[in-house]
Image (tube, rainbow, N blue to C red; front, side, top):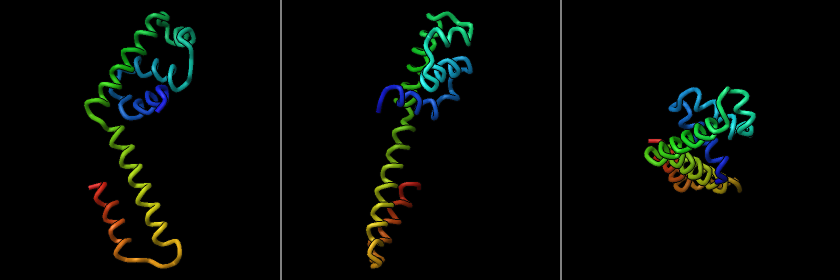
Length: 114
């Protein structure tokens, strides 16, 4: 995953754990693609202050993910869910449904969320 996309994704999961100012600055930088100077003008921070806030926030987000792993877990669940859905589509594509295989696929999906 690209670094900018990774941080934006982590913001979705952990952004509320940052201070409102940290969240504002890092969202401007990663989501809105603003420069340090532009963010400085919007927030009243110096360019160095903006850079420090971005680095601190980025570090916090990566640390939260390292400890909690919510983003990785979500991506894993989403990927496995898509695999199971594709398997169900394959099992039912030609009109013939093998209830045993279909039941096994549905159970795998159910187990993901228990």
